Amino acid sequence: MTTDVLTVAPEDTLGEAAAKMTERGVGAVVVSDFGRMIGILSERDIMRAVADRIHSSEARVREWMTADPITATADTSVEDAGRTMLEHGFRTSRLFKTNARSASSRSATSSSSR
Image (cartoon, rainbow, N blue to C red; front, side):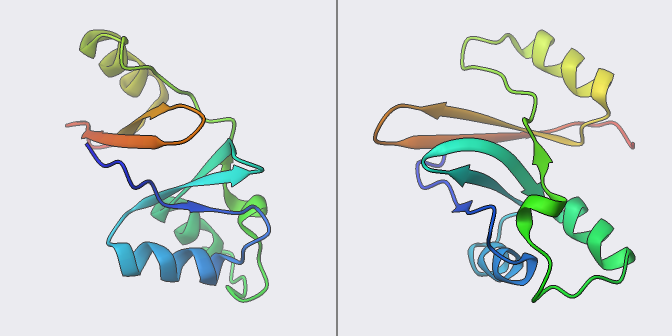
């Protein structure tokens, strides 16, 4: 489990977010506004933006992120998490455990080809 979760701000550009993701070798980042998770930005979101021919130095994370992502807790069973992934077509899931001072993340990959 990673305890150093990469976050970006909604006003960051897609280029800034992509550079941070590349530097850290991650495929998704948490979008945080005043310390509260408001969304997630994934490689797929960036690919959608590129396909729309946006300028990465102008487009903002808030325009392309997935707002209010579906979340699970550490108490969610593997079966329930898997069912949620299949129902929503998720390729991966992120489990965030947060408190006032820290956050940690774990990822799981679906065997679905969606």
